[in-house]
Image (cartoon, rainbow, N blue to C red; front, top):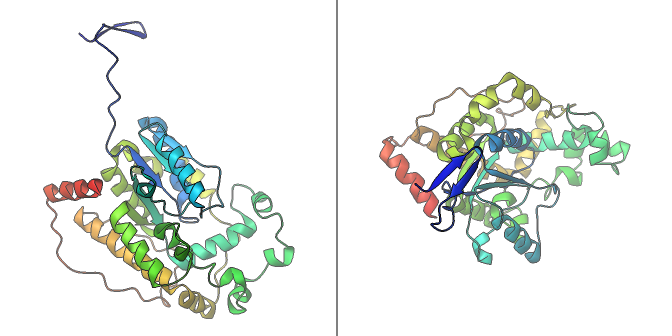
Amino acid sequence: MAGRTLGNSTYLDDHGPPPSKVLPFPSQVVYNRVGKCGSRTVVLLLRILSEKHGFNLVTSDIHNKTRLTKNEQMELIKNISTAEQPYLFTRHVHFLNFSRFGGDQPVYINIIRDPVNRFLSNYFFRRFGDWRGEQNHMIRTPSMRQEERYLDINECILENYPECSNPRLFYIIPYFCGQHPRCREPGEWALERAKLNVNENFLLVGILEELEDVLLLLERFLPHYFKGVLSIYKDPEHRKLGNMTVTVKKTVPSPEAVQILYQRMRYEYEFYHYVKEQFHLLKRKFGLKSHVSKPPLRPHFFIPTPLETEEPIDDEEQDDEKWLEDIYKR
């Protein structure tokens, strides 16, 4: 017998040190959350899950520094890598290449949403906050002038204000492209690099419009972190908390303004459609056919959606597990 229990204490026999902690695999997960893509809802869930499942949730108080110098990258990677495992680290930060600095590359997860809807949510959130408190926006943007705070969204877009034009609109792709300076430049190079990183470094990139399916797949792929997440998400008390993070005073721009936004965000949409197609392939592979509610702000009649592939997907469980093994080996 390796040990004897007496009350709340355990006496170990003289056979060396206690056995090392058995870690789940993977035991290092990074959620480099994209702003205004449901991440506050997911972080609320993670706080509950970390206590329930005993993993180390590592969060950051830095919310407005996504691009880092080389030294800052090295320091952050060092801090993340030395966290107690199993850990899940979350922060608004563009993709970090751990292997570049000699670290073990963690498993990445993320969620994105329709780019125009994400932009509109951010535009009004910066000005007016959410239901958690009407004064939050004053703390977040104290130097914003009143005329800027109440700037009509149509005027901002049609008059080409900096906030409503490139490069400000090139927002989602850099989270997946990385820290290279060219990742900030709207174009094919950043787009293709972002797609490559999604394929090689991300276990899952979901879309906010189908959040329940994202949570179902996370529970399947990372059970030590996400087991039971959907029941928590559907709990009325949690939904009440989640509703407090809804942006207030949001209005819909004119059809002309939305069309202009779409043209300015064509690379963002190409990436969004790519991720959405990959996500739907995963859903089909794992047999998910849930109901999807349409978000009220999605401009369906302006934005053409590419046809989804109709190629047959092998649904055998053995292939599912092989796919997961291949992901973890990357």
